[in-house]
Image (cartoon, rainbow, N blue to C red; front, side, top):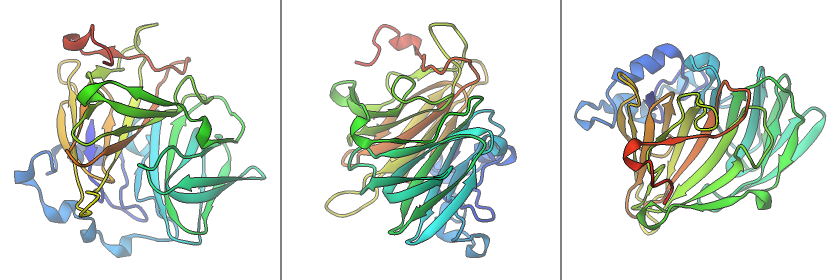
Length: 318
């Protein structure tokens, strides 16, 4: 488990570059989970050395299997100024290009997939593009924007294709102060991928989501599947003042020595979950919380099977 503040672990063209050594360092480094130990020079994006960045090839946040020591799940957050183009090789992974803000075109295998995108993650579901393994793709954006590349190591090579925004199933999950909306754009039963599972969750200010706490770190056929998971967060500013907000993410151990974390999260932060009971995700009152979940596992079946914490085993999603 690791908590990755925006701007942490900057290297080369990346504002956030993850490898196994950095995961180990992040688990013991000062962070917002313990403000008394925080070092602003280590967490303030303004302290990033601009000489270490290349604006023509920038993934400001990246978590890839080969670099994290993970075996499956990957995530890149790409910020593109107007008129920029960004090419990447897919390697052994399948990818979904998902606009977070703005639109783009995805050039892959002789075709162009135009993505209208959206004004921002709180404005509704977006269209998206699926990009297969073993190819090269290029993203171009005339007006610029911010785009997520969600990926997973996979075996099958599926065709490149377009995912329309109106066809994204939106689920009202939970009730009362645990109500939230889930955009199941690439859930296991909504869009065909080989291994990748990805959804978006929007939690109203003051509410809890990813609740009751649940896990997917054991292979129990028909009951639970093994899935790595990445949370990428954005927090809605105060609509009147523009003041940025925050949220909190809890992960508790499901086994002796397992993951144990309570982290303050802000826009651009990420949390990697290799194991453990995850939840709740808590939104600050007055500030809606968005997170993108990217999941992948080693199983032959692409499925999302979870177990609820024993204290909530009979409740499910209320």
